[in-house]
Length: 562
Image (cartoon, rainbow, N blue to C red; front, side, top):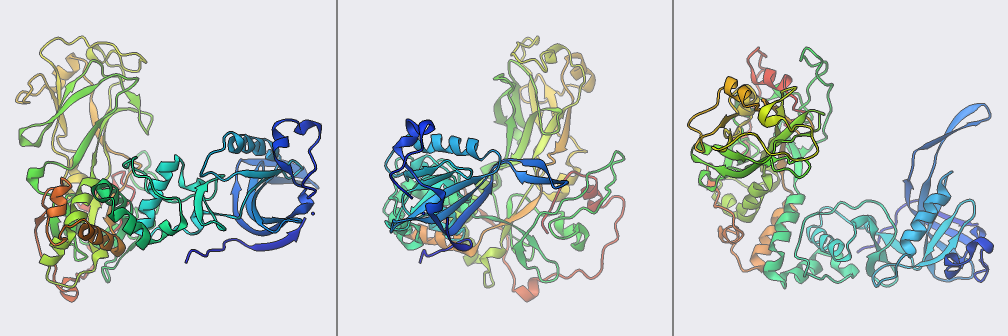
């Protein structure tokens, strides 16, 4: 049942001559709405409270007192001499009237089917906007673990061209429509088939109703289902005591000082890293699905290509690196474009290329054929205990202070042609790391080279690069990214299986995966029984100068949720 009441219930009479008008200043646009005295507004319950602007500091009785410049409360209200309930937004603070005016303009600019309409106003010291009907914000009955509700909400927001926080339910008519900004609503964000028109009725929030609706649409919803399943993934951690998989909370740590030493402990999820053997953690791969025992069960096939994706950051519309190509040996080749203008990255230094693992490709392949893998395993399956490992984003930072020659257009806002003539110039990148151990050593190894040879057989030396004015590229791990294990709740697996059956596919096969363009995952192992799979840390390993944990400590990785 969708019967949710939120907020403290307050019964308070503050009484409307609904026919009265505002006066001279209300002429025109304000006269189109009923003027309601504050004393005629009876608050039934509060639905949502929001701070809209910064603090306003004032002296009061010798003390410096802070109040928010603007805040608003959305409430269910009754009006004197009216039987039905309404929804009111009350504004308080020194900036209350300016915020009220802005929202009045936005909410009255157009009247369209499916949007809730303004009934009345109040422009007193505490101004109010009053809407027809008793409305409940979508956030009050949205549940993240309702898979088909999330698919429906995504399509509904796309149909109505709004975010989830502007969706409200009319409790008397059982319909959903757009209204004022309410509490935020977590929802999938992706491009779905815009031709899919969904009904704006409350029953669609029930999983069985929405599933039945989408089942009739067939293939046009396949991508939406898998994308929504990806969105329902969660970051997890492994507890070394019982290998229990749970939800993490990211812990911050103090930044490195100038000497490169950590001033505080480096937390990986909720644990310091050395509670698990580094020879176990270090070999975890980014293209593999693991069980709770840290044993791999399925892997992205090598013949399907790399999961790593490079991104070239063009600046001011200039094409810097073009024609990305994977060549023999796993090298990624870029042809240098008409300009190498760089833009500032997250650190304020210049960067023009990054690499990230496309975990969505691995997730699609896994979710679309997971039952086939589970059938091959030996033990009873706890679906939520299977996970992938997401690596951080890799970046390449420009290191020269005053480039010349080819790089003489750096920092300029307009594109300029390079001075290099044929043959064309190429930038090659070695395959990114595939395991945690490789990731820790990646910055110290060979990551890239420049060449005028399209197959990369002849590399330009440092001296030659300097002569041609080519930049030095320092590999780094983006500070705002982390390493996390990622898993999916049981309800997601159930939803995918039910969807495959509804679509006429056998979940025990790779038919649906191949239909969706996913490669067949390689089954690489079988899970033993839990009591056999449990590993124990007999003793804390001593840290040494060359250990993996030293590599973690000296890196910029913020968290690894094990």
